[in-house]
Length: 127
Image 1 (tube, rainbow, N blue to C red):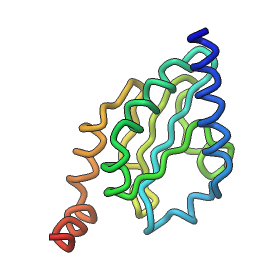
Image 2 (cartoon, one colour; image 1 turned 90 degrees about the horizontal axis):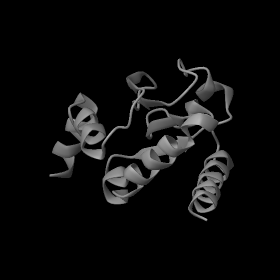
Image 3 (cartoon, rainbow, N blue to C red; image 1 turned 90 degrees about the vertical axis):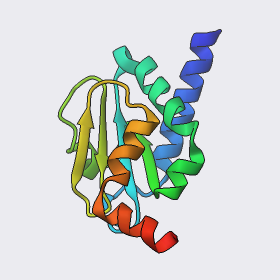
Image 4 (cartoon, rainbow, N blue to C red; image 1 turned 135 degrees about the vertical axis):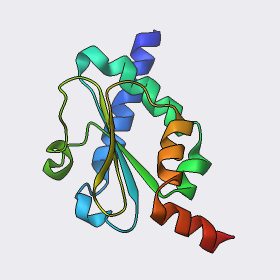
């Protein structure tokens, strides 16, 4: 029963992420992008990662983060190095800022982003 629920949630996430325009160029200078890649053997890690990030929607929104799970677009897939679980953070400039092959906590993601000059500028303008 639990495995079925996990699979349904994962399928929903994948379908929702594929429904958005996935050309990386459309996010450049507008959003930061997090790509979560996995395969059948790592589906639980992918789900845990999604749940971890999704728990702080306010923080994601504040930092302009768009998350995609196993995206189908070639511009996103070509960034992938690993065949198993991999997380890739792409900055607003379109550059890869971080790669990780294990779970990433939200505070780690936010810490990386908050240390970026563009994000610091955004925070100064907000205050």
